[in-house]
Length: 422
Image (spheres, rainbow, N blue to C red):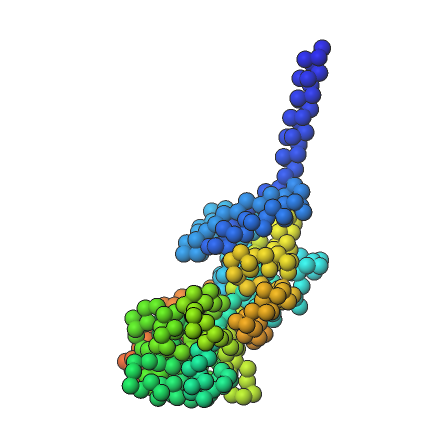
């Protein structure tokens, strides 16, 4: 009789165990690069706050991420939630692979548009629909040598294009007997040319983003302005001339560089000893005294697969990762800058002298054209013609005309699709 009671007790325990596990919801989440690795450390707290929800994380290398996500979509195997570089959002929205989050935002107390930098939030908005929530953010600002600028008569960083060019000439003149430059503008980095074009009010593309507009007056002015730094020998021309950016900066091979937050830790490693206090960051100069210098709205967003069967639970995960205190914890893990403005009130950020410029710049960032072909345009075409113009193989006018011609070919399918949908 006793053994029979034990038998039935075991059956009851097993039954309850099975019933509990059947109620458990598993959210599949793909994170890219180090974010996919370190986000795991935040999740035990989420799971403790949300009994019955488990998060299964897969880390995907950035180099393989886009192809893997496209393949997963094609095979109906996308995870419930995943990370996207914010310039990838238009591509996945066009594929109808990700969920419009507008209805979820309406009932959320955690995620509100006003809690984010306007330009960053806008990268996730297509046709008034919100497809992603900013997770971490980046942009590009000016890194500069304070000692070199002071020697050139500048007690503060340049605020306008004219000041930047004048300062560069003074630095070069002070080093005319040695091979040193004022600023580093790599020909294989497209961002600077887009930034200065946007600062000048240029529309990069035209006719509903179906044709290139690089040969427009405003973009031509910005492009010409930057190519003058090559012609004036104010920046190294060949990429091979700078094999180590941080060493070159420490050795005064150049004294200014436009880059992002990922380089702060690297500069700290190189700018030590007597150089420790001889560098700083600044928001970007603008075309004139009356115009703020905008920069790019970069970073990564969190999205929900349109085919997810666990949207409600997945939204809870996104809300959790969007809490200011969790964003700060994530910042301490991977040095990714928080997307939520309230998180910037933390002392680890607001007392960091290098971060002040980033906070200022985030108030003046803009999205690049929201089309799937954008990366193909800037990586395969813009950089090519920057190099040719910098080396005087083509004039600025010739380079931008050819660039527009190539971009128009890239956008041919987009024009066809838009015409077909009319």
